[in-house]
Image (cartoon, rainbow, N blue to C red; front, side, top):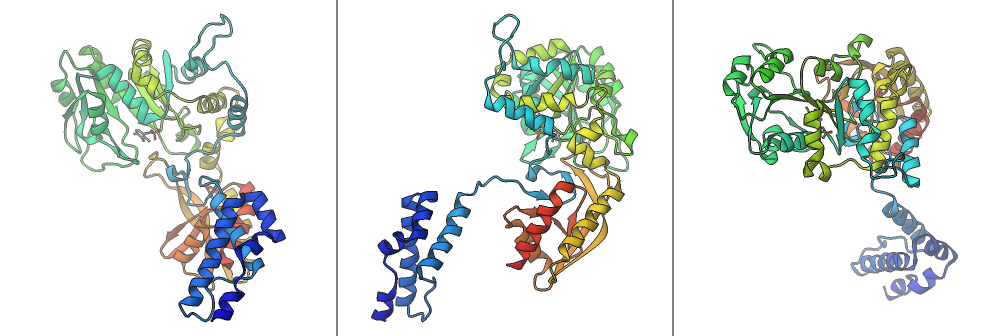
Length: 463
Ligand SMILES: *Cc1c(COP(=O)(O)O)cnc(C)c1O
């Protein structure tokens, strides 16, 4: 035993080896020395515990290459790119919308340089960061005025606080939505200081319910897009137009939270029907709120658009300053909105819309390419199967998008094990399990990712 303990390498000797010196150059002396010390201690402990084989291979080289791998993993950024093969295009856990190259370039330019973020270049005086997108949003939606904040939750909070604090806000019981990340409409209303007057029932709310609850000091009527669920059957809710004229008659305003508002009519392209911001405003809604990184396909942001007098009140309220948009998102948003301007066709330019609109045959072609690449590994089985993708992000909740997936099997891994190995790949790959099959859906993947995807899967399943 004493002999074997004596055979363990000395910390100092290991640290003086050539490989260690290289490691110290990349990771610093302290981290390497600590790792060497703890590895050798581990080997000593396992010898003393009477295990004949030390837990750690304590030769210099093996020990240091193990340390190299561990330090590299430790230093790798926690937040990193992943491949979304879930078939859910707007996946909140995977960062929602991929940005268009134009948006990425705009972010980079503003990140690397000073900018006229809050400077009016004509007068040389202080400007507003909103000036960079307001006109564009107005042009694309027909709104009189607009402002952008950190996200849609912040947009709703700003609206309710600025327009409704201390006053009654009337909203339908059927629209008390909860969306991901513990955003619950009744809680947000309470947080804003407005007083919720819930009307109607879960399945039916009539115009008269709103009318009876609205009095002279009602701050606003709030309509919410029930974007992540649908009540079907014996249901009813008044039309926007009727609600808008009720609001006008009662001398109050109508605010609608669209969640994932769209700027163009997707149903014209065989895609599901989400309310178009322009139509909602045309119907008489005074203020709408919607997300930047859902179907709009831009960065995280919350857009507020509508009547000037209300937008001005929201702009001036301190809460709006507290949830203001940052310059990088603002740059990306402006560039994304630009892609909606004629003669651009956003369906060819905005990645989220490209993924939604891509013909199923092309998705199928990508699935074939991937399955061919995967089958080069004899242990992997890969077949192309039809599947159903979704827009996600709380938008278009029930709408199926025809898609194709690669069903991956492995000679020694279960579907769950495959999923877990792929999550820990150097470029994590996220698929889904359906009917005990592991699927990589190709509608949410790009052609340019296929090579990395195939390599990641093959390497991850070899372990
Ligand atoms: C997604 C959503 C929100 C929140 O949007 P964020 O940009 O994530 O803050 C609010 N309301 C509805 C109806 C939504 O679908």
